Image (tube, rainbow, N blue to C red; front, top):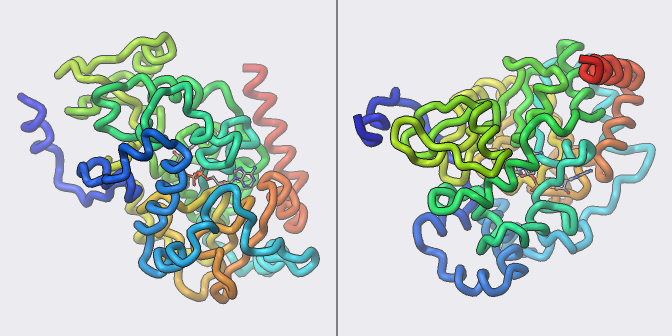
Length: 362
Ligand code: CNA
């Protein structure tokens, strides 16, 4: 059976692909600025940021076109930090203490794992996009471009070596989310992260949607034949290239690349978001679709709390949507403050200490 037959035999499913507009254009060969960006990586980064925003909801696109500088990593946030004493955090903590939030949806990105020592994408200086020289690629997103991978898997494999689960441990933020689950308040966590730290801290599988896949499984990037994940890891960690046992094409961990389908579990969002009574958005720049638009699908009366270093997406707007709250600053400090307001700090710390000790002693 050839790979086309194999693809035809896959069950009919609803498909949603991971996208940024720039990646889409590159896949379609419609990217007139590519040559210029190859010569000037700074221009590449700035263009990628602004193009990606345009692929969000139309209203957001309008906003970003009017003020593209707001999305540049080096510019100061437009929104001043919220004054102490009347912060969004305190308002939401009060709602939670009153028992008004029993179906909490958490949407997270790379910013929840920087405290575990894993760089995010876009933080200037430390983010992976600022440190890609060593990978010798024409533009940052190439590392997650499936066509580029087909020709040259090495840049992704080099990055994978750093990101493979095992060398990093969950931090207070992950354990805070697990505590939400312990208290019966977590409807679901939607993460863009591929580091596996949500599972490592004990958030159960049925409460977790890893929207951009993970390293837990691996398969052929062409015919999708599954491949033993431990063997793939062994090959990649030893600078080898795992090859498909069926068609000999390169195997990759099932991390979702630009243009690839999101896992079927992602579609739980159609049930979860309308049911949510609180949305917490943490550590994401909300630049990757379709994930970024999820935050617009809760009911209009539902409070949304953004915890991040700077305002992103619709949260840059002033005034905010009624029920929107923003708390800016270092995420671990913010989440510690949140836990304290809820009276959960000791519990989270205890849970974290116990589990991390168990891991150390096993
Ligand atoms: P991003 O675009 O790099 O954005 C991260 C956001 O978090 C930025 O707005 C940062 O300002 C913010 N942030 C970072 N550290 C902190 C901190 N300590 N305190 C407060 N805010 C902070 O990453 P996104 O997740 O939005 O982009 C989606 C990509 C990133 C996904 O496809 C992931 O697969 C990919 N990624 C994942 C990991 C991981 O698994 N840990 C690491 C790097 C990239």
